[in-house]
Image (tube, rainbow, N blue to C red; front, side, top):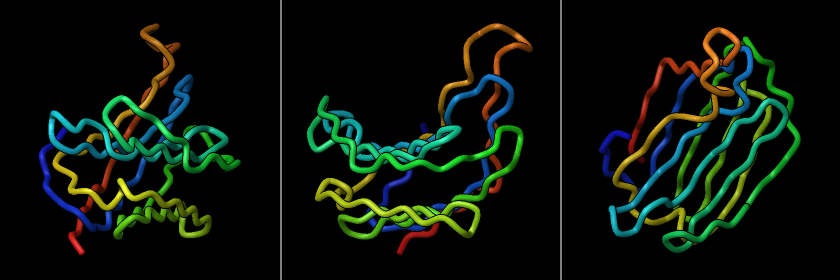
Length: 136
């Protein structure tokens, strides 16, 4: 997790899944008392957006098929603007979701996901590069 206070922003990054990794994602949090606000989850075959209207509460805003090749770099441009999140993947597929909580001030963010387990070379890996965040 990294501290970065923002409300509206554009976040760009590249990621790839290796071997047994199942998904990568980015999460935005409010204060420690507030907890998670919104997640963008990039799976092998789907894109999901999860909102957290209240601490400990999860709401799936989007779950759409999107085959994203393992072992390939993918570029993501994520825009958070008011209550709307828009993700453009590989300059082609666009996904949009909305919820009032997305408009809240974000205080930290993190990149992560599921590498497929702790089994050495049999496990996967998540890789990220070229992170750029621009406040709107």
